[in-house]
Image (cartoon, helix red, strand yellow):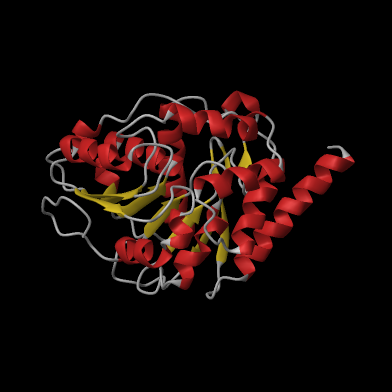
Length: 303
């Protein structure tokens, strides 16, 4: 690794550690071996909680350290929470050699299965179903995983999922393209300012997002929308929460599509919140929804 690359990696690690240091609760870091690499998981909350454990998947370009605002809002007060660094995305997970790289949706599902098995042995998930939640790209992964292995989960929470119920707006893709092709802290900063409408953002969160621009790039797994029809009639509670000011898709149309695809799900649109900053600027509402069980009933609109 060159001196420049080493410096950029060190800058990301420093921003990551600083973000975690601001969390108001002690964090237990666990490295879980899987066939696709070693996955870093940051855990907190009571290990003996009666509620099923909660597994969190971040969005693309984000890490487990980005859930700090939700932690400060009380997430993990009454249950054990395991926040995951996606393999190949910014974070402390270490991908396997190229021969075992994540390439297809089936690989992602196998990776998550192995991760949950590993957590069960290392962190004691209790062997029962867990609650799975994801934001953005992490919600796409979570939806695929739940559709393929619904028996592993008692509840699925999708936070402004992308490419699950609606495609990406062309204007959003064009705006993000320079940042994706050649990411720099300045391009990340400019994109987030545009996407969030200039909202006041936590400096530690912003610094972490900017530092992620220098993270070694790995091509993310892409593929079709998940077959959510496989969840029909199964005892998996589903909640979908869209960001009312999301620029990546039309939140109203996406919510309508979610209600059609999952008639028994609880679907809502949170006004005044952008896509990328959802776990930050709406942390109290996100933490409340992640912590509270959802009754098995059909629901429409925000609640």
